[in-house]
Image 1: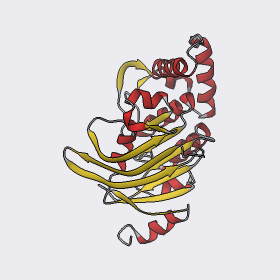
Image 2: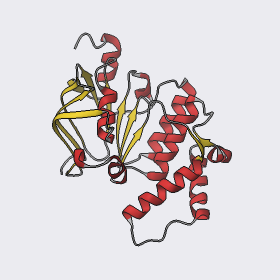
Image 3: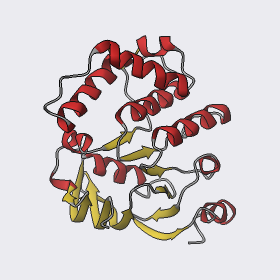
Length: 248
Protein backbone atom coordinates (compact mmCIF):
# COMPACT_ATOMS: atom_id res chain seq x y z
CA UNK A 1 0.00 0.00 0.00
CA UNK A 2 1.29 3.46 -0.93
CA UNK A 3 2.02 5.89 1.95
CA UNK A 4 -0.62 8.45 2.82
CA UNK A 5 2.09 11.13 2.61
CA UNK A 6 5.37 10.70 0.76
CA UNK A 7 7.91 13.54 0.88
CA UNK A 8 10.84 13.00 -1.47
CA UNK A 9 14.06 15.09 -1.50
CA UNK A 10 12.17 18.27 -0.63
CA UNK A 11 14.08 21.55 -0.89
CA UNK A 12 12.49 24.90 -0.06
CA UNK A 13 13.38 28.52 0.58
CA UNK A 14 11.91 31.57 2.31
CA UNK A 15 12.58 34.97 0.71
CA UNK A 16 15.43 33.44 -1.25
CA UNK A 17 17.05 31.79 1.78
CA UNK A 18 17.27 27.95 1.65
CA UNK A 19 15.56 26.33 4.64
CA UNK A 20 14.84 22.73 3.65
CA UNK A 21 17.71 20.81 2.08
CA UNK A 22 16.41 17.40 1.06
CA UNK A 23 13.67 16.18 3.41
CA UNK A 24 12.49 12.59 2.99
CA UNK A 25 9.54 11.32 5.03
CA UNK A 26 6.81 8.71 4.62
CA UNK A 27 3.66 8.57 6.73
CA UNK A 28 1.23 5.67 6.46
CA UNK A 29 -2.42 5.65 7.46
CA UNK A 30 -2.96 5.55 11.21
CA UNK A 31 0.63 6.45 12.16
CA UNK A 32 1.77 9.17 14.56
CA UNK A 33 5.10 10.78 13.66
CA UNK A 34 6.92 13.28 15.87
CA UNK A 35 9.23 15.78 14.18
CA UNK A 36 11.77 17.33 16.53
CA UNK A 37 14.82 19.55 16.12
CA UNK A 38 16.52 22.78 17.19
CA UNK A 39 15.21 26.26 16.43
CA UNK A 40 15.60 27.25 12.79
CA UNK A 41 15.89 23.67 11.53
CA UNK A 42 12.86 24.00 9.23
CA UNK A 43 10.09 22.28 11.20
CA UNK A 44 7.49 25.04 10.85
CA UNK A 45 8.56 25.61 7.24
CA UNK A 46 7.71 21.99 6.45
CA UNK A 47 4.30 22.37 8.13
CA UNK A 48 3.51 25.48 6.11
CA UNK A 49 4.64 23.93 2.84
CA UNK A 50 2.37 20.93 3.39
CA UNK A 51 -0.58 23.32 3.75
CA UNK A 52 0.45 25.50 0.81
CA UNK A 53 1.56 28.78 2.42
CA UNK A 54 2.57 31.09 -0.48
CA UNK A 55 5.51 32.57 1.44
CA UNK A 56 7.46 29.33 1.16
CA UNK A 57 8.86 28.28 -2.23
CA UNK A 58 9.60 24.67 -3.12
CA UNK A 59 12.74 24.56 -5.27
CA UNK A 60 13.15 20.81 -5.67
CA UNK A 61 11.53 17.51 -4.76
CA UNK A 62 8.06 15.95 -4.61
CA UNK A 63 5.25 15.61 -2.08
CA UNK A 64 2.66 12.94 -2.84
CA UNK A 65 -0.57 12.73 -0.83
CA UNK A 66 -2.97 9.84 -1.44
CA UNK A 67 -1.04 9.20 -4.64
CA UNK A 68 -1.54 12.76 -5.95
CA UNK A 69 0.90 15.66 -6.35
CA UNK A 70 0.21 17.77 -3.25
CA UNK A 71 2.29 20.69 -4.50
CA UNK A 72 -0.11 21.25 -7.41
CA UNK A 73 -3.09 21.62 -5.07
CA UNK A 74 -4.31 24.94 -3.68
CA UNK A 75 -4.53 25.32 0.13
CA UNK A 76 -8.33 24.88 0.24
CA UNK A 77 -8.03 21.79 -1.99
CA UNK A 78 -5.54 20.29 0.47
CA UNK A 79 -7.95 20.94 3.34
CA UNK A 80 -10.84 19.36 1.44
CA UNK A 81 -8.62 16.37 0.65
CA UNK A 82 -8.21 15.76 4.37
CA UNK A 83 -5.14 17.70 5.58
CA UNK A 84 -5.48 19.82 8.72
CA UNK A 85 -2.92 22.27 10.07
CA UNK A 86 -3.02 23.15 13.76
CA UNK A 87 -1.19 26.45 14.11
CA UNK A 88 1.42 27.29 16.71
CA UNK A 89 -0.33 30.66 17.11
CA UNK A 90 -4.00 30.31 16.01
CA UNK A 91 -5.49 33.47 14.49
CA UNK A 92 -8.30 35.46 16.08
CA UNK A 93 -11.45 36.13 14.00
CA UNK A 94 -13.80 38.66 15.56
CA UNK A 95 -17.49 38.58 14.71
CA UNK A 96 -17.51 34.86 13.85
CA UNK A 97 -18.38 32.40 16.58
CA UNK A 98 -16.55 29.09 16.88
CA UNK A 99 -19.82 27.29 16.13
CA UNK A 100 -20.48 29.36 12.97
CA UNK A 101 -16.93 28.74 11.79
CA UNK A 102 -17.19 24.99 12.35
CA UNK A 103 -20.59 24.77 10.64
CA UNK A 104 -19.24 26.52 7.53
CA UNK A 105 -16.17 24.26 7.45
CA UNK A 106 -18.26 21.12 8.00
CA UNK A 107 -20.68 22.03 5.21
CA UNK A 108 -17.80 22.76 2.80
CA UNK A 109 -16.26 19.35 3.54
CA UNK A 110 -19.67 17.68 3.26
CA UNK A 111 -20.30 19.31 -0.14
CA UNK A 112 -16.92 18.09 -1.36
CA UNK A 113 -17.28 14.53 -0.06
CA UNK A 114 -21.01 14.05 -0.78
CA UNK A 115 -22.07 16.65 -3.36
CA UNK A 116 -25.54 15.14 -3.81
CA UNK A 117 -26.45 15.28 -0.12
CA UNK A 118 -28.33 18.30 1.30
CA UNK A 119 -26.28 20.46 3.71
CA UNK A 120 -26.49 19.42 7.34
CA UNK A 121 -29.30 21.14 9.21
CA UNK A 122 -28.22 23.57 11.92
CA UNK A 123 -29.96 21.75 14.77
CA UNK A 124 -28.42 18.41 13.75
CA UNK A 125 -24.96 19.98 13.58
CA UNK A 126 -25.54 21.63 16.97
CA UNK A 127 -26.43 18.27 18.49
CA UNK A 128 -23.29 16.68 17.04
CA UNK A 129 -21.13 19.57 18.23
CA UNK A 130 -22.58 19.44 21.74
CA UNK A 131 -21.80 15.71 21.95
CA UNK A 132 -18.21 16.22 20.79
CA UNK A 133 -17.72 19.06 23.27
CA UNK A 134 -18.94 16.86 26.11
CA UNK A 135 -16.38 14.20 25.16
CA UNK A 136 -13.67 16.87 25.10
CA UNK A 137 -14.93 18.30 28.43
CA UNK A 138 -15.72 21.71 26.98
CA UNK A 139 -18.57 23.92 28.25
CA UNK A 140 -21.38 24.59 25.73
CA UNK A 141 -20.86 28.37 25.95
CA UNK A 142 -17.37 27.89 24.51
CA UNK A 143 -18.82 27.45 21.00
CA UNK A 144 -20.65 30.79 21.21
CA UNK A 145 -17.46 32.83 21.65
CA UNK A 146 -15.77 34.61 18.73
CA UNK A 147 -13.10 32.39 17.22
CA UNK A 148 -10.00 32.58 19.43
CA UNK A 149 -10.81 36.15 20.56
CA UNK A 150 -9.84 36.45 24.21
CA UNK A 151 -8.98 32.75 24.37
CA UNK A 152 -6.10 31.64 26.57
CA UNK A 153 -3.31 29.63 24.94
CA UNK A 154 -4.86 26.41 26.20
CA UNK A 155 -8.34 27.39 24.97
CA UNK A 156 -7.00 28.11 21.48
CA UNK A 157 -5.44 24.66 21.31
CA UNK A 158 -8.63 23.05 22.61
CA UNK A 159 -10.59 24.89 19.90
CA UNK A 160 -8.31 23.35 17.28
CA UNK A 161 -8.81 19.89 18.74
CA UNK A 162 -12.56 20.49 18.48
CA UNK A 163 -12.08 21.43 14.81
CA UNK A 164 -10.28 18.13 14.25
CA UNK A 165 -13.06 16.22 15.98
CA UNK A 166 -15.65 17.87 13.73
CA UNK A 167 -13.75 17.57 10.43
CA UNK A 168 -11.99 14.22 11.04
CA UNK A 169 -9.01 14.90 8.74
CA UNK A 170 -6.94 12.03 7.39
CA UNK A 171 -3.71 13.84 8.29
CA UNK A 172 -3.29 16.40 11.07
CA UNK A 173 -0.11 18.47 10.97
CA UNK A 174 0.35 19.93 14.44
CA UNK A 175 2.84 22.80 14.62
CA UNK A 176 4.08 23.00 18.23
CA UNK A 177 0.66 22.34 19.72
CA UNK A 178 2.27 22.00 23.15
CA UNK A 179 3.63 25.56 23.02
CA UNK A 180 2.45 27.64 25.98
CA UNK A 181 0.45 24.87 27.66
CA UNK A 182 0.73 23.98 31.32
CA UNK A 183 0.75 20.31 32.33
CA UNK A 184 -3.00 20.04 32.90
CA UNK A 185 -3.87 21.74 29.61
CA UNK A 186 -1.32 19.57 27.80
CA UNK A 187 -2.91 16.38 29.16
CA UNK A 188 -6.38 17.54 28.12
CA UNK A 189 -5.29 18.58 24.63
CA UNK A 190 -3.37 15.34 24.02
CA UNK A 191 -6.32 13.25 25.18
CA UNK A 192 -8.51 15.21 22.76
CA UNK A 193 -6.08 14.64 19.88
CA UNK A 194 -6.02 10.89 20.53
CA UNK A 195 -9.80 10.82 20.60
CA UNK A 196 -10.31 13.04 17.53
CA UNK A 197 -7.61 11.35 15.42
CA UNK A 198 -8.18 7.71 16.36
CA UNK A 199 -7.18 5.60 13.37
CA UNK A 200 -5.94 8.68 11.50
CA UNK A 201 -2.43 10.04 10.87
CA UNK A 202 -0.62 12.79 12.80
CA UNK A 203 2.59 14.71 12.15
CA UNK A 204 3.45 16.30 15.48
CA UNK A 205 6.03 19.10 15.28
CA UNK A 206 7.56 19.82 18.68
CA UNK A 207 10.66 21.06 20.51
CA UNK A 208 10.08 19.07 23.65
CA UNK A 209 9.85 15.43 24.67
CA UNK A 210 7.19 16.14 27.32
CA UNK A 211 4.25 16.07 24.86
CA UNK A 212 5.30 12.57 23.79
CA UNK A 213 4.53 11.30 27.29
CA UNK A 214 0.85 11.87 26.56
CA UNK A 215 0.75 11.33 22.80
CA UNK A 216 2.90 8.30 22.00
CA UNK A 217 4.45 8.41 18.52
CA UNK A 218 5.17 5.43 16.28
CA UNK A 219 8.22 7.22 14.90
CA UNK A 220 10.42 10.13 16.00
CA UNK A 221 12.49 12.14 13.50
CA UNK A 222 15.10 14.84 14.02
CA UNK A 223 15.21 17.68 11.51
CA UNK A 224 18.52 19.51 11.55
CA UNK A 225 19.97 21.94 8.99
CA UNK A 226 16.96 21.42 6.77
CA UNK A 227 16.97 17.62 6.55
CA UNK A 228 16.03 14.62 8.65
CA UNK A 229 19.31 13.38 10.11
CA UNK A 230 18.03 10.51 12.28
CA UNK A 231 14.82 8.59 12.98
CA UNK A 232 13.78 6.07 15.60
CA UNK A 233 10.96 4.66 17.67
CA UNK A 234 9.21 6.23 20.65
CA UNK A 235 12.21 5.66 22.94
CA UNK A 236 14.41 7.73 20.64
CA UNK A 237 12.82 10.90 22.07
CA UNK A 238 14.07 9.98 25.56
CA UNK A 239 17.58 9.56 24.16
CA UNK A 240 17.35 13.03 22.62
CA UNK A 241 16.23 14.49 25.95
CA UNK A 242 19.41 13.17 27.57
CA UNK A 243 21.97 13.84 24.83
CA UNK A 244 20.50 16.80 22.93
CA UNK A 245 20.70 17.53 19.22
CA UNK A 246 24.36 18.42 19.14
CA UNK A 247 25.30 14.73 19.44
CA UNK A 248 23.68 13.94 16.11
